Figure (cartoon, rainbow, N blue to C red):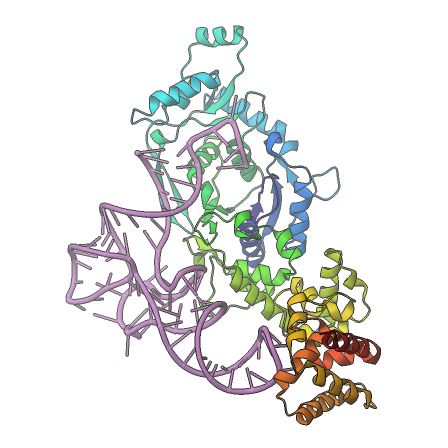
Length: 481
RNA sequence: GGCGCAUUCGUCUAGGGGCCUAGGACGCCGCCCUCUCACGGCGGUAGCACGGGUUCGAAUCCCGUAUGCGCUACCA
C-alpha cells in the first residue's frame, strides 16, 4: 500500500511555523516513502475564513519548496482540494448515517444546550448535554419541526466501550466512549463541521497516514468511530507536539515572528527554516544538524519524532541561517540577496554591484535583513549614525588620523584593497597608533558607523571620489569643534 | 472540574536496563585570531521534575505526585 498523506490547514490566517512543521513532516514522510502528499483546504467555516489566506498558504509552501501533488480541483486549474466544494459528498454521508440510525437530528436551542451544560457540571457525566435529543419520539420530532426549529446532525456515539488509538508518536491512547459525547456533524445551516468533513475526506481520498498537531489527538476517537461506522478503515495517526514560545505557551505573534512571511521578510533562507523546523521534534542521529532537503527526505522517519513539546529557539534558527548563508556560492548569495531586497522594496535592490559586496558581508550576516544596516551606506548615500559620529568628533586623534589618511590615499597609484591596506598601515606607523585606534575614525568617516564591512575593501569598493568626499566631510566635522 | 498528552543542560536534542563519572548543538562565559562587527579555533558552565517500586543494576520499566500544555464549540 503506497503512502498517501495530506496537509489540511484551515484558511483562517497565515501559515505559522507550527503549521509549516506539520506540512513539512507530512511532505518528508511522503517523499521518503515515494508516496503522495496532497494539500486540502479545510474551509468548512465560512465565518472564520480570511480573504487571501489560501493564496498566502500556497505562496508560503512554494517558497519553502514543499510542492504538493494532485491539485486539480479549482475549476480545472491548479489548486488544493477545497472542502467548500465537496458539500454533496458530506450530505450523502450524513443521509446514510441518518438512515442507518448512526446519526440523528438534534433540535436543541443554544439556550437549552447551555442550560444542560450548566446542569452537567455537577454530575460525572460531562457529555450528557450533547445527548439530550438522542432518543426523541416521532411525536417530539413532529413537534419541533412544526415549531420551525432548525436541527443539527449529531453522531450517535456508543455509550459504552472505548476506542483505542495506536499513535505512531504517542503509542496506545485509550478513550472512553461515555466521555466523548455526541458531536455535531452538520450545523443548523447544513454546513459540515470539521468532525465530519475531515475524516470523511481522509477516507474518500485514501489517506493512509494522518500527521497533525497534538491539539487534534482528543478528536481522533470521534473521527475513528465515524469512519468505522461508515465501513471505512481509519488511517494510522501521528500526533506532533505543539511548538511553544519561550514562555512555554503556544507560539504566537507576541513571541516574535511566527509566520512564514515574516521569516521571509527578515531575510531567512527557506532551506534554513526547513532544516531548523525539521529538527524541532525530530532528529536523525542526535548529532547531525545541517541537512539538505534531499538528506532530510532520505533520513526522515516518524519513529524518531519526539512526543514532547518544543520551544522555538530564534537564536538557533539565526545561527543555522548564518550557516546556510555562508555556504552559498557568491553568485547564489548575490541573487538571493537581491531577491530579498526586492521583496523588501529596498532601493539597494537595483544596485548592479551587489555581487562585489558579497565577499565583504557574507561572513557577517545572520540574515539578509541585516544587510542594510551593515553595508547600506556603501551603496547608498545616507546620513551617518549619530552615536558613531559623536565618537568621531570626540576622538582627539581623529584630526591627524584623517589628515594622514587622506594624504596616504592621495599618493596611491592603485586604488585596490592591498594598496589601501599598505597605505593605512603606513598611517598607523607614522602616527605610532595601533590599527584598532587609528581605523576607528576612518571607518566612521567612510561608513558612517562603527560597525561596517572590512575597511580596505570598503574603501576600494567606494572608489576615490566617494572616499575623499567622505573623508573631507569627516575632517570638516572634526575641525568644526 | 473532567479527559488526554508531555516531563534529560536556559533552549533543541542523543539515550530505549549495565557502553552514561549522561553525548552533540544553540546560547552563555573565558582564551586565541582580529581594522569594527562577525566568522573561525580552543576550553568551560549547565541537565535525567519529585517520591515510591521492579531489578544484581534504572535517565531508560511500573505506580503515584507535581508542573506544563491540549481538548472539553453548530472552531479547526
